Structures are given as C-alpha cells and as structure tokens.
Image (cartoon, rainbow, N blue to C red):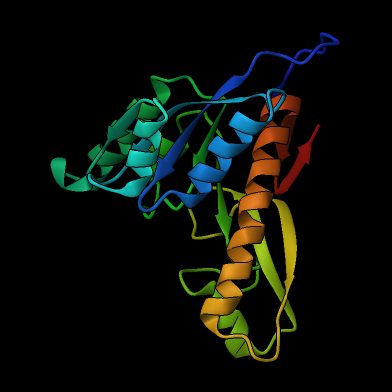
Length: 214
C-alpha cells in the first residue's frame, strides 16, 4: 500500500510541489497553471515542467510563467533504461508529492515507476474500455452512447493503472472523432484540475486497485 496525506492543522497548508511532464502543446499544463493562479487555496505549486523533446509549446508555457524546465530526450542516452533512470533523477530532484503526465508521450519504465513518487495520467475514454492511442475513435466506432475521460495512476501497462476518477461525456448522433474529442478534452482538463488539487491538498491512499481520496 502507498499512503500519502497532509497533516490536519485546521488551516489550509502551504502549496505542495508537483512535477508536470509534457510532450506537446501543454493544454492540460495550462489548465493547472490557471487553477493555481485563480485560486490561492488550490494548494499546488508546479516545481518544474519536464519534456522529452525541445522546442514545444508546453515548455514555452512554463518558461513564460517562470517555472523551471528540463528536457530529457531518449536519443541522448545509450539505452531506454538509462533514459528512464535519468528522467527519474530529474523529477526526484524536485521532491514532488505527485507527478502529472500531461500529454507525455513516452512509456515510463521500471526505474521511474520504482522511484517512490505517484504519477497520474488522463485518458480520453472510460477505462478499462478503449485503452491505447485511439480511445476516442474506438469508442465512436463501437457505437457507445456515452464515453468520457479517466484519471488514473500510471503503472507498467498502457492505461491499466488504478482509476482515480472519471467523467462522462455524451456521444451525439452527428459526432466525428474531432468533435467528440474536443468535448472530452474540455472535460479532461476539469477532471485533472480537480483530481490534482484533491490529491495534493487532502492526501490519498492506493491499495491494490482502489484509490481513495481523503
């Protein structure tokens, strides 16, 4: 069992640090940044933003906000295992209480997953249905009437980790993959902001496949 919690001091605690990992435009990162800026009691501080490649908007968003950044590229290491260990070391240096994979397009390996910090991710479907890279398309092709998004703990599989929370999005008769995905992404950002805030502020437990928010 992994347990993390905040002391009950009767007051709102100081913000606690997270690290956000990105690979692209960073819209989920921006949602977290906006929540932090808008709500003094949100309880979260982004200690650093990491990426697997240079020159992306996700890094630029962080740099414009004065958030430290780092880049850890697979091609800069002799093996995938060494990249995984290097990424773990970069993240660990910031001592986060939570790591958020916000559109990070690399599978995390044993060194990272065994480093002791909990990493969470979002997926644009209601897991365990429609895992993988084409969750929106697969759900639409299957003919479901509702789909949605899932916030889950990252494990060694692809979208197989314990589910933290989910949000439902209805499927319209005239939906395309693009139109449905846009509605899911809006829901996904809201779900991520709420989930990260609750996990960091209030604490959580993970026991087998059950995640409980305090």
